[in-house]
Image (cartoon, rainbow, N blue to C red; front, side, top):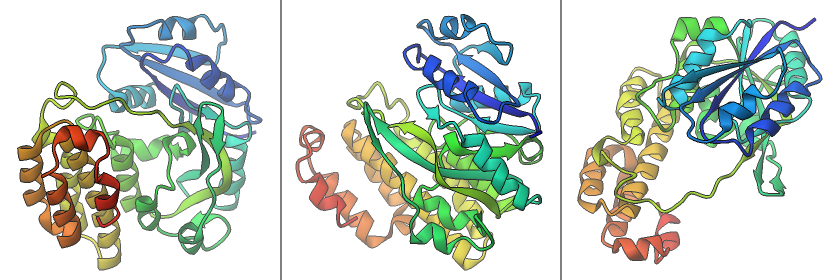
Amino acid sequence: MSPLVSVVIPLFNKERYVGEALQSVLSQTVQNLEVVVVDDGSTDNSAERVAALKDERIRLIRQVNAGAAAARNAGIMAARGEWIAFLDADDRWLPHNLECHFKQLEQQPDVQWSAGLFNRRSGTHVAPMKINRVLLASQSDGNVVRDVLMVLPHGFLCTDTMLIRKDVFIEIGGMDQTLRTAEDLDMWLRIALAYPRMAYCVEPIAEYSVEVAGSLTHQQVRDPLNLPHFRFARKHQVTAAELSTERQDAVNRLVKGLVQIGIRRLLLAGFHPEAGQILDEFRSVLGDGSYGTHRRLARIPTVLLRAGFGVKQLLKKA
């Protein structure tokens, strides 16, 4: 019998989707599991939808809204299982998710965590993710990634596909609750520094829902110089400085990617002066090409940026 898995689901205003997410967990081919749903201060009927499901494997925890990292941390602390898995409330697992993990882990009993491929879903359209040469080159014996830092910048890790020993969280610490963006990426990076090898299912085991982001407004960006993207970057610039050259380059790619996303968010929200300050702060990380491209973007009026005027052409050069 497989060890007990605690599936942690952070929940915030997902009443339309949470039932399907839960059903995808309860329908697993591996059934030794519990589900810890942490309602993060939902203002709709999300929690009520969960409470209405009379299944002894489901536990519902309620907390004041504090973000996904805090909700996941609460779920981890409440978990009774030896292994922790995650699922977002608007995503779903494929039926063999846990089965695939444990098949890989049986072959590599010293490995402390596992991940896998995933599909991207938009409405009824599902786009399968395919293994590519970057991930293949990072594997050695079986389906084990030799160094997770080498694949992190390429988007092969999705929270919905992670399975991690609870002891690892006790050792490394929980998710960084100061980050409302990239808190999961931060967690995987920190684990990878201590446990570089990872089992990996080279087939889709989850479906990630691709949400269309709304327009970004001044109200949505309250502290432009301290977006989570930039806090992540400041934090892990220090991390990179302590690594060997190859691993340092991998962390720097992560940092650069988050900074670019944050700068574009500022520009779309109309914070052009603040974007300029961030560009200057991270110029060495961005490199001359990306720095110059984003400087040119910063000269385009916000209304035209939101309309996509010139953006695609410039970003191709970033």
